[in-house]
Length: 203
Image (cartoon, rainbow, N blue to C red; front, side):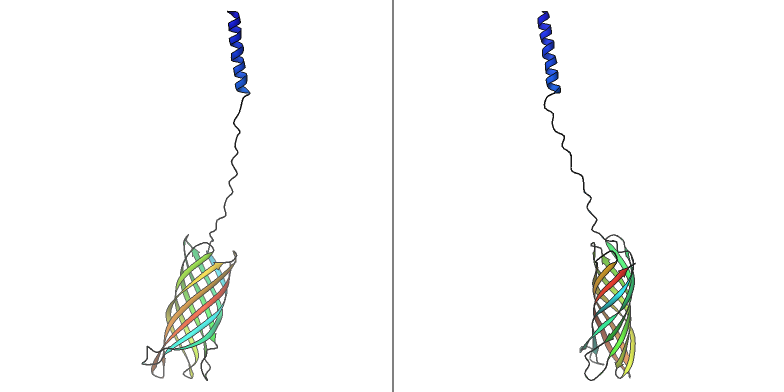
């Protein structure tokens, strides 16, 4: 009887040792989580820069509103603005001044300048910002009917800005404004269309 008890004890002890020193499942370490950089950009802030591009004046003679005489030229100038980023929606205001010249007018010299204030509304898609704009502008033309003329008018446009670096912003824009000039008792409808490329520094 004693032998059976001792044998049972030895078997139980051996089983415990076998269990303690037996196969142990390896501990799998999880790879460290790498934080992905946020691709979005914060558009809030002031900016200023310069722009250049093409310009077109469309003139409708008195009594012929359906006839437009187009004159192509160039423009260049400066701008300053401020934008506010609300997440996916961005709004802003921009003031720009442009010199107009080199219009293709036969046997005439036509130039001028335009001052615009624009309200922008865009979609924040990261470093790329497409937007729509409305504007109020003052146009001065020299050589219009042999005299200088000026008028104010509303307009609209489309554009896009690209944040090349946190400080440098590039842009393209198309804008049109309508004016009504009264000269020598006649009324002339004038449309100013501009296509612009710009570079700005963000403060």
